[in-house]
Amino acid sequence: MKKWIAILIGFLLLFSTGCSTTHRVATDSTKQLTQDLEDLSPSIESVHFTFTRPNLLCRIEMNKEPDKEELESILTEIENFATIDNINEIARSVKWGLEISAIYLHINTDSDKKTIEHSYYARYFKTFDASDHSEENIEGYKIWRDNNVQ
Image 1 (cartoon, rainbow, N blue to C red):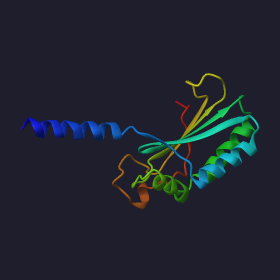
Image 2: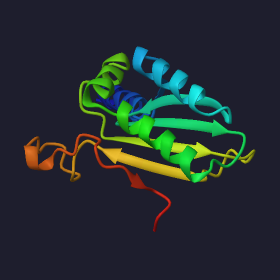
Image 3: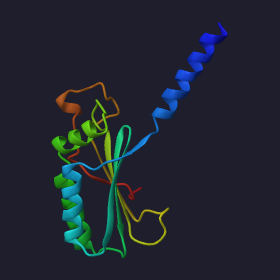
């Protein structure tokens, strides 16, 4: 009996640590987006993509605050990138068999890496019911929300 309890605890620990694994993402589409963003603005120092299930994070490091036009251009690039095909390519690259729930965009514009000056997100589902694959519940990453607006 103790052996089965130990095995069960081992599986629970294995599954609980697997949930928070973060994967670096480097697909053809993320590499192209990185290049497009860096070409767009010389103040972009780096672009990183990570996946921590079930979400994708794009983090852009800038050496100064972008003006309104520059920020809108960055958002347009991200919105154009966030197609279901591109996001599914990312899911396959990290061996995630489900839809990526949300894409988060964090733009850091100063040396304080803990604060994010600009934060946005888009979701696959309109609701939190990931079992509802009806057309009425699919947003498909088309609506971007400002995470800084309260």
